[in-house]
Structure formats: C-alpha cells, structure tokens
Amino acid sequence: MPLNTPEERRRAESDLQKLAKASSKDGGFLPLAELLYRIRETDSEWFLKAIEAAGIKPRRGFALAKVHEVFGGGSAPVDRLSRIGWSKLATLSSAAAKDPKRIDELLADAERLSARELDIMLASGEALDATRTVILTFSPDDYRKFEVALERFKAVRKGRGFARKERALIEMIEVLAELQGWSDELDSSG
Image (cartoon, rainbow, N blue to C red; front, side, top):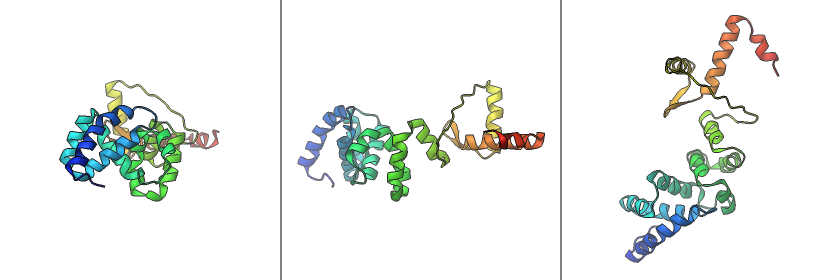
C-alpha cells in the first residue's frame, strides 16, 4: 500500500526513528520492515532518505524491505519470524522469493542453523546435518596455491571467499587418494 498523501508521508517519517529504535528489541524489526517496504514501493528516492532518517545503514534498510516483501504477507507466523530475526530472514529472502513453496523448509533451516551455517547451506545447496568446521591458516603464498586448487576443482568465487569450497576440497582429497592408492581408506572410515 503506497504512501501517497502528504499526511501519510509525514506520519511515516515520524514513525521511522521510533520504529528503528524499537527494531533492536525482540521482533521489533517487523513493523520497521513493513514501513520501509511501503516507502520503497512508493518512491525509491524517498526510500533512501527514509533509511538515513531512521538512522540505520543502507544494507539493513534494503534487507528489511526485502524481508517484508518476501515474508510479510502472512507466509509465516509473526512470532516465528521474530524468533528467527531479520538477519537470517534477509539471508533467506532470495531463496524464498525464487521458490515460495520452500518458505517453511527454509524457515526450519534458519531455526536450527547458525547464521554462518545458513550461509553455507544456501551457497552449497547441501544440508548441514552433523557437519564439522575446520579452520585453516595459510601463509600468503600457500593461500594463493589453495585458491588456485579450489578454482581448479570448481569452487566459485563469492566476495572475498568461495562457495562450494568444501566440495572442491573433498574432490581434491578423493583424487589424491585414488592416485596414491589409499582411496579404500576413505570409504571404510566411519
């Protein structure tokens, strides 16, 4: 519902800062997300000014508007969305928009996974049941070699990191095991 009249716009502007302050409390982000979405749908230039007036960063403003666009139409109970939080919902919004039939499944993933695990799952497309995290530290030269190897095994650059890096690393291990004759050890470990 657009905010076309001057009175509607003034009321929206006066609500912005109040809603932005309340957004840090449990579930308080949902009314702010709805208002930002309505402003975005009314006037994109006003939307940028509204984000600034609310005192939030542009990334958060755009994410909140997207959260309302995808999840605000009653696609899930408000209390469930509040528990999950705006950051995880923003992470899910693209996948949920592409396939609305998966919203419940995606929300269930968001409830059981950390934000980082959710990012990994969405990037790789693989479920993360019983996963393990490994932290590797490389010298700059060794990291360059690691990057080349990941790209050779079809990991995909994503920002400063890689998507599919776990799958690429496992494929490297499988190739090495096959070449050196110990691939049967990979299958028998449990």
